[in-house]
Image (cartoon, rainbow, N blue to C red; front, side, top):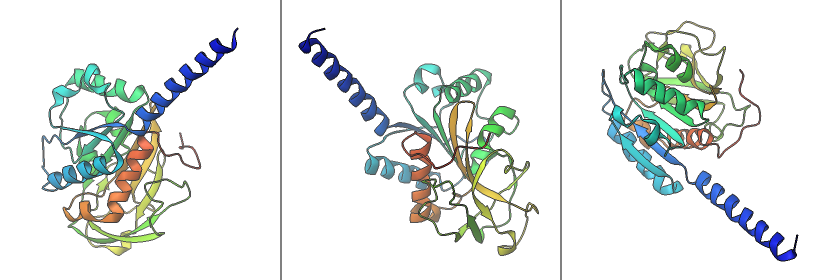
Length: 253
């Protein structure tokens, strides 16, 4: 093979690699906020935050509340789905199958707060998110115990203990057995309904059916979306879900 031909092949491969890296570093994100049950007043604040994060990171961010957007043709445009306080049963059987295929293809999912109060009768979705919402006490301060051992970008900026004000979800099923917990609630730090378990996970991640899934129970209040700590948490969760940030240890499966 001639020197010119080898040089051409090398340059061609470099162009391809550069193109792939450019696509991966500028993920396409679909923020979905459809509600079929309770509708959070903080959804517009979440939309504003996602718009700002998109501008800051040069992400391509789209917004939708239309379940008809869940087609194979449309979802193939996106690297990450962000469920922003979705609630209720929002998909038909065909849309559920499309969503499942999307995750199986290795894409990312970020669930915020009421994403766990969505499609509660769909077992696959509940396992994918990592838990199913049960109930909650009133909005109040609580202490969160942060596990930084995985070096996850969603919590790297946090101290080992942080106090947040939010609506603290209790879940129907324990989640610690099959997800990697990043933040747990200290149930002695607040009043009202609790899970009464040794650990009360509130933020976690895992690999599921080929995809990367991050969820946090924070995000009920408008104030959450202007809290720098929460903003960095969502930003880090998206970067990991998009495959742009790695962690020190693999997910527990």
